[in-house]
Image (tube, chains in turn red, green):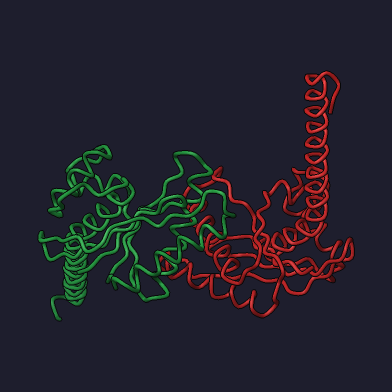
Length: 192
Length: 192
């Protein structure tokens, strides 16, 4: 499966494409989409969208994994980040690509085993996992690769979880049906 | 000037088109773009974007005025709202339409004279200003019209302010130039 990871941002939007089968992962492309700080917001969104759409059309990912934005930091920055994530999700939907959102702590936990790993640790782990000759720069680019890796490692787990939940629901349904049949049978004096 | 006002939202995105010359304003169209609550976020953004783009292409506004999102309320809702506002701004930029953002209190102040007017007051004022037979519903639709009215009333003011600031800067430049010339002349013992 090929995943495009996106670390949304107006000034630097991290982009990373990773191919994966099980634990065998390889980096296809990594970089950032930038927009001029002095441009109007709408033009900045357009600049970033153009690069992201170009990456989608060039690298043809099967899934887009975007970092879920929280509003815990600077309000102004967060709004721009959320707007970029909306523009990226729209571009994916228009190409019929499924979109998954992962929180920063999910990504850190998947990559390093700890939800509190710092940026340096995440970059070091991504470099090692993907067997890169050098650490990807800037940090936003490394984060985008980490998102893609996180999605590749979490997706099978999420699918197994969904399958297990579906199985449990089926068992519960069957159990209720048998229980009701037994109750009916008891009310009818033992006749089925 | 024709303005498309947008009150961004995932469940209901208010849309209102207003034509205006000075204080003579008329409502061209008003409504909402909706998206199914159970759909994935990316699909919801696509649903809303399709309606908004259709309005832009049908009503051909010259400007798009969007409510500026603040993260003071429910974080989850605010993120969706910010994502919709990003998608709307992108659609405008792709049509070379200028985009203006107005805060809720700017809109209330422009419409009712008070930054603290409640939704009911804003709806009542919009209905009166645009000479509508009935109050526009839902509130998101009325808010979108209020945004368009706010933009039409604020834009000339903003332009006059910008012109006044440019004039003041020019006067200051001229003054500094004359001052330097006088200083040079004084240093040269009165010769120019």
